[in-house]
Length: 126
Image: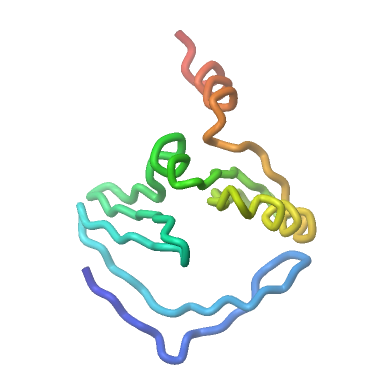
């Protein structure tokens, strides 16, 4: 693993309606079968794992993330760009306000059993 910290952090604006300044603080280069874990201030965990073929971008959505009190949203913006967003369950109201104010739409909550069943039925015909 190789870590590069950017000092000072590169700052740039994002958002459709709400302008937010992000700080790019650094980069991590992972080799295959290496993982990094990110923590919230209250100890929730989120892993990214490098594989030879690419990345596991999230832990299991309806397993580890759900147990860690994250909800996983598939979101689309007005430019038709699609994102996977992880939302702390106790901050859903803040998230939904942000989504509305930034002209985005939640297409689907990915960890909900009914949505998983629907995806399975539509894409894996028996």
